[in-house]
Image (cartoon, helix red, strand yellow):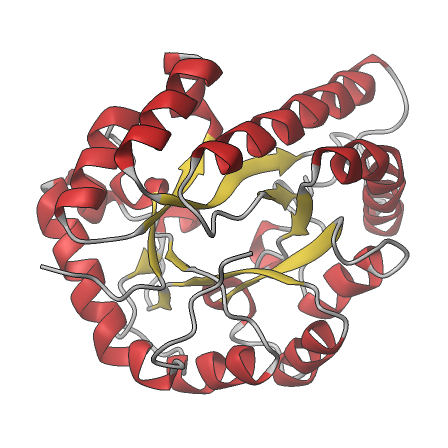
Length: 294
């Protein structure tokens, strides 16, 4: 079995797999790329995790996640900034360990509104302040900080950045090699300006990651776990993929799914089903030969 050469299995899709297990399942399913999460890396230790990534022969499409820096100035904010510096270093190490074409991309989830506050605008402004602090470190490490806008239902507790336009506004004061954006279909499919903003992101070279999964109602009781295989819901993957391709993105494309039933399923079955879903609704819109090598 060979998955599409640009398909990346985000580790969150098989959440309960250790890093070793995730690497093995991804390779056996014929993928060439994996999106990593910091927690399984930490379970092994960074150096050992990097060795195992290197041994797998897989590209690394991204590391998730940094961010959560909307707190006002104080001890907790300083700790969050320091944690993001560590995440930048981890990203650089894992990307260097991955196969040729690995992306040194750290996905950022901004963080929600601090407890006791209703100041959404101020929380979002502090994201920009955090980027200004982190960009010199990211640039020196060769890492792109990729701002991921999340659906507005997560604005209170997870991400005060809700649209691609907001993410681009935050990114634009900085060099595109240091700060980009994530185009995640689940989070931004509803936005009436989304295709205009994808074109804007492409024009400035800021699409650092493209992630695909589907939206289906009713939502789960825990809305975090409401993602589905591409093609099982209402998202126009052909339209999104054409737009991202037209914007010039040629990197790996991650399928990242948070769904309890999928997490509980056998990992090999999930990897195979993911590849089939990708082929059915995404692959037809892709350049058949373009795979990023940068």
